Length: 134
Image 1 (spheres, rainbow, N blue to C red):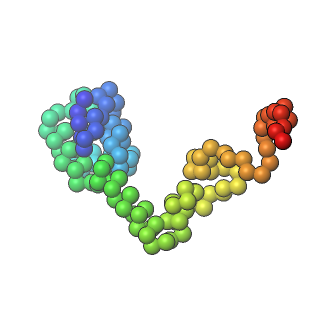
Image 2: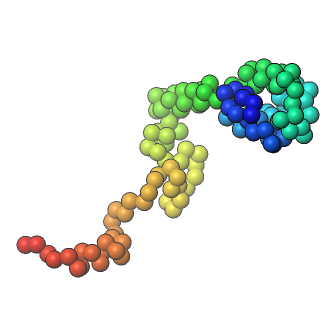
Image 3: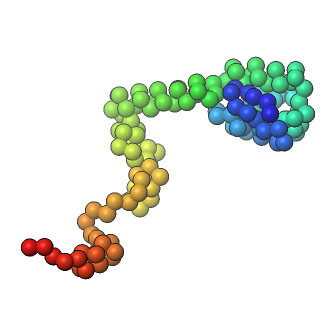
């Protein structure tokens, strides 16, 4: 299993698909990398020569990937938060940033539901059956 940009890319897949396992490399960038390296995208990763791997590695290192790209994204979000931009405030509050509705959906960002006003049927049933202390 060859290592490119600190990531083990799969042997049994085509090289254009294998490159997408690297954070920051999608299908378009993988295609551009292979074109620049003059490598056929339909070759399986295990069939690449050492020279081809070296050229691909050199090109991948010139593109921001993995830790470097994650740091850039984190810094950009921190800048938005510090400048009190609307998007930064949404990041701070843990709400969707790009205009999605929050009345019914957005569970990924907001987390598990918290019932505020009304009680669920189970909670109401527990209150009815529990003895009242005076």
